[in-house]
Amino acid sequence: MRRTPWTHTWTLTAGLLAAAALIPATARAADPLERFTAFAVDMSGRARSSATTVDIAIERWTTDDERDRLTAALSENGADSLLKALRKVEPRVGYIRTATSIGYPLRFARQVPLPDGGRRILIATDRRLSFMEVANSRRTVDYPFLVIDMRLAPDGEGEGRLLPLARVELHPDHVVEIENYSAQPVRLTKVKKAD
View 1 (cartoon, helix red, strand yellow):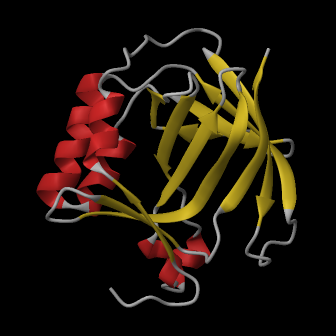
View 2 (cartoon, rainbow, N blue to C red):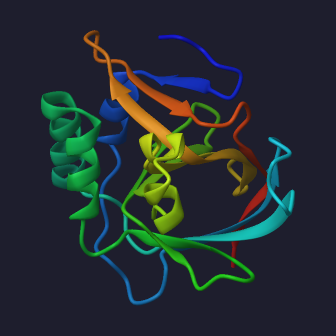
View 3 (cartoon, rainbow, N blue to C red):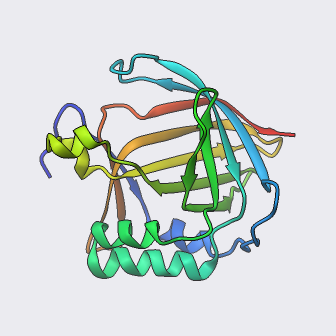
């Protein structure tokens, strides 16, 4: 794969997906099961506002069946199939919003325990493509996913990364590769569980 200055690649092993299977899924609750706040810092320097506060709510965890369907869609037919399957996930698993937005639905959320007693939370969703983005055939249409990776200490505080423009690919050796459009992901600092 040819690397360009504005791409950054993350690699996740299939073991992470398998480890996520160990966490029980929970039914949707009327109120979010968990809420997190974070300070999002855009390191690319291209955004009008380089920092903002985000609110991430988990209303339910992705079930094992949903995870298996999404994994099968990616492994059998690639990223386009994964995108279609992700868009069909109902009800949503939560939402993300800023102080000036009404919120954006999240379609995948799993947590994996860490050896130190903390946890890693992986969140993904499809992202809305703007009319101008599609009409102008911008390269960003090839990055239809939004991915969040948070690592929390046992006290519920931590840090993370948000990839607002991501591409997901599965390689023959079952390694899931997540490529970010920008050279740097959005850093999530001061992540903490809200009361």
